[in-house]
Every structure is written in structure tokens, then in C-alpha cells.
Length: 252
Ligand code: HEC
Image (tube, rainbow, N blue to C red; front, side, top):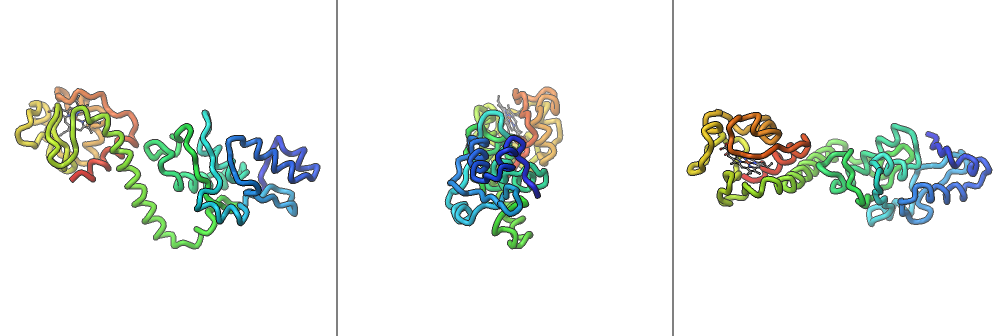
């Protein structure tokens, strides 16, 4: 793997690794890293992405960080972290950053990095793989990753639910507002709450609130059930809808 620094080549060629390192830090600008976090490897003449031992130790205690500036993407953070332009390395590093900073992304969407978020950059080796994590059993980390993902989705869903809260509660015994209480709605038949004045349209729609049906409903209730009394334009982002469904499943 050879990291390329188009604008740094002159300095590198002159053999001044220290200048290259200094410029590299200036170049990424918003990257605030402890000095000497990124080791240069003069032997190969290539800037190595390997994180120095001191930073490896510091990673879990808040080592390198990256503050997201306007126009920056996850890829920019990956470049800052690895100093690489190798696509495979960047993709691997991006995944590491994404996994380490679940709250920095809206809707748990890697393309929706929050502006101003401060990303923790875990230690990675020159291939972009996490340092120290490589030997962890893949199945165990995948399982805890899935659980963490589900929790993150539900958490975002709770935020998205703010758009529904003017009409709905989702808590047990939360009562009806303009819309019916949604506690336990996942898997229930539509228009099933006794005492709520549902529209004839929803009562006659004969729908069960499966994930797929909830998805359609949240996308555009008036299109799914013409004549519904739920006056709501719909949630635009598919991921937000999935998160909303994950959240409602926790309310049962
Ligand atoms: C402007 C008020 C309003 C908003 C905002 C609103 N709803 Fe509703 N919702 C209603 C009404 C009224 C109904 C009953 C519809 C009918 O009877 O046709 C309803 C019905 C529902 C149902 C079906 C419940 C059942 O018992 O069958 C679900 C699920 C639901 N809403 C979820 C949501 C979610 C999630 C949001 C936010 C993304 C939302 N609603 C936003 C008013 C609203």
C-alpha cells in the first residue's frame, strides 16, 4: 500500500519526512491529533498509516479526533485517519470510524455525517483494519454490532417520532391524542383500539401493521389509505422509517 500525497511529493522527495508530516497535518486542517500520532516509515519512503503505539494506547481514552467541517464526508475522515488514498483501505477505515461513532450519523446512514460532529478515530493499521480488534471472534463482534445497530436505530426512531408526537403517544397508557395511542401497534390490526374514532377508510382497510405495512403507511398514509384521517405528509427517508418501526417495536 502506498499512500499518495500529490501536493506533498516535493517535500517527500527531498527526503524531509518531518516536513511532510507537518504539512500533512496542516493539510488535513481540522484533524486534531496528538503530535506523532501517525508514524512515517522512511525505509519505504511511503507515509505509513500505522498509528504509533502511543496513539494506540490513547485511542480508547480519546486519542485522535476529527471535527466534521462543511462539505466533509466520512471518506474525508478516513483519509485523515489513514493518510491513504487507496480505496480498499479507505473503505475499511470508514467502516471503523462509522462503527466507533454511531451518534455522528443521522439515521445511522454513513452518508449523513453530522456537521460539527467530533469523530473519534480508532487506531488502525496500514490496511485500515482496526488495531487489536483483528483477533476478536468475528461472530461475537458481528452479534454485538447488530445489537448496537438495533439500539441505535431505535434511538433515532425515537427522535423521528417527535414528528408524530403532536398527535400520538407511544407509551403504555399514554392515551389518545388527535391520533390513537401507538403502544403495541407493531403487529396489531389497524383501527383496533376500542374507543378511538377511526375513519371508515382505515377501519375498512383490513390492514395488519406488519413492518412492510407500517413502512408504506409512514411513507404516505394518504396514498396507502385514501380517506384516512391521519393528515401527515409522510417521512421522506427510508432509513428514518425503518428506525421509527424499530422504535415502535420497543413500545410493547
Ligand atoms: C396530524 C396528526 C397526526 C400526525 C402528525 C401523525 N398521525 Fe398517525 N394517526 C393520526 C390519526 C388521526 C390516525 C387515525 C387515522 C384514521 O383513522 O384514518 C392515525 C393513525 C396512525 C396509525 C394507525 C394506528 C392504528 O391503531 O391502526 C399509526 C401506526 C400511526 N398513526 C403512526 C404515526 C406515526 C409514526 C407518525 C409520525 C411519523 C404519525 N402517525 C403522525 C394522526 C396523526
